[in-house]
Amino acid sequence: MIGIVNYGSGNVDAVANIYKRLNIDYEITGDTAVLERSSHLILPGVGAFDETMRILYDTGLKSFLDIMVLQKQKLVMGICIGMQLLAEGSEEGELEGFGWIKGKVKRLDSSKLQLKPHLPHLGWNTVEQKYEHPIFKNIDQNKGFYFLHSFYYDCSRPEDVLGTTDYGINFASAVRRDNIFGMQFHPEKSHDNGVSLFRNFSTL
Amino acid sequence: MIMAFPFLEIFQPYSLMLRPRIIPCLLLREKGLVKTVKFKDGKYVGDPLNAVKIFNEKEVDELMLLDIDATTEGREPDFKLIRNIALESRMPLCYGGGVRTVEQCKKIISLGAEKVAISSSVIQNPSIITEMSKAVGSQSVVVVIDIKPKGLLGRYEIFSNNGTNATGLNPVDFVKYCEENGAGEIVINSIDHDGMMNGYDIKIAREIRKAVSLPLTILGGASSLDDVSGLIKEFGVIGVAAGSIFVFKGKYKAVLINYPNAAEKIAVLSSGGFNI
Image 1: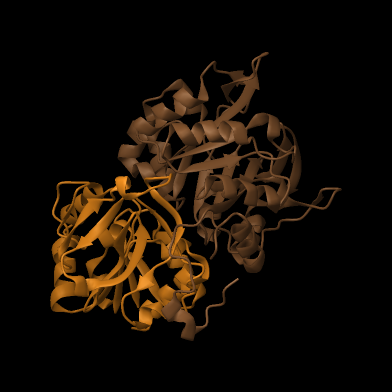
Image 2: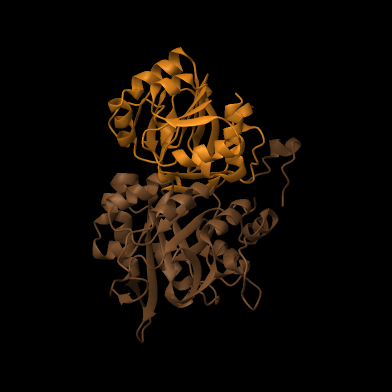
């Protein structure tokens, strides 16, 4: 079962709706007992770093998820702000992130962009895979994924970068270390490419 | 047009850049969709949920949904309808209409829209941009300005309350203010071009593009996909929004929800100078 971690973030239902249509078992929950029964966890997200992290600390979900992911090795995927939470911290806020994948979230440098628009990075862009991985099975590169963000994951270890995207700089738009995945774009709003990615994640 | 043959991967047959967005703009009135001409005479064009389902199948880049009566009727956004539409939408959604408070903005994001558009409320209370961008992130705060040239000199002015109230505000100064205060995107909606299908207002688009570096979306006047290509050719990465061409077909304007298919879209982008 897919446990969609509910911490008041915006796109929870959109993720759930895709799994519903795929006929894959899921639950939207903040209940640790239910999350413990889940084989896969999703950290969704539209929001600001500190606001989201604070809810995870206040509800005790932070330390619970540390155990689920680091000790029990459950598969986990963070989306957008949910991906940025995997880092040690963010320039957008002051709180500490999960720190599961070494790196810091930084503001995209718009001075590297020659043409307008600058920030936010908004629209459809390509994610170039750094190595073959089944999570990117059946992805149409011509269509790309939908992005909406101003901050990016500055990964400390190059081997943790699963995919990159060009926007002024070449940044990590997908990260992975062992059982932990993060996607900067919004697969829940990326049509068939997004649906494929959610399906692929559930079969890992 | 380049096909995605696996053996070609080493040549990177796909574009490695951000694409322009082609955006249907749907207008809500009494739970139905209408299309207006110069902000008047809304003609019924269908049911919003049905339109979203069709646009899902067409793999639309992004959808803009504007409740054109909420502000003039002094009521709240229809949260139930927004929720149903956001749930159904597999594409990014921007909602606008009647959004006045930070609480309403947060609620709309929590219902599953990616972006919230504000217009009349910013003119009444400019600091709302900063407050909203703190609450939901500036990437999700879109400012829509409805504009029209006025007087003998044809100076552009911003209108509020669905085009009924002349504000005296200069669009160029106003968008600069919006950018400095936390807006994430600007939508320029040309009142005189709305529903006229006489081409986009390129002149004001140029002035606004020069003034700010935010993502910019142009709405009002598209008569065909050639107008869409033309805008892309001039501005590169830009949001190209339209109503009539995505809800009407043919010279008698028969109601038909439509959107370019994959091949047509590649053709539109490539004649705009984007080779994907």
